[in-house]
Length: 147
Image (cartoon, rainbow, N blue to C red; front, side, top):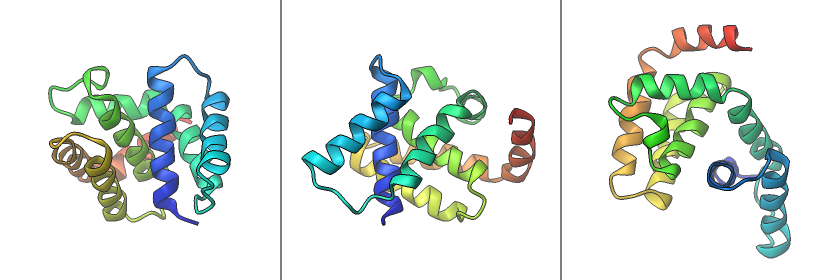
């Protein structure tokens, strides 16, 4: 079961939610249907995929407030949709998946940018996430206030 694939599919689902008028369950169901019936994909960790999507959406206000603070002159609403979705997944993992090494989260985000983003996306995403790392313990403590 691949967490990389789960992240990839979470990114795609969050992007779809961002640009289409779907609710969370419709988007998740659509992604699952496409993966299993159309693509025959079985290597995805569905539990982790669902956790990423619901986790990002449950904490999106806190996640976006942090991204607005650390993205230096780029409001979340003005970011390219793919970059925004990648950052949201990565920040959710950094804040709420404490067993996940931060270096792995950043490497995965950069990898997704190189596949789905523009030629400058990976530099932007890496810079934002690297800036957050210095304050990660404080941000994790403050997240408890949002629960």
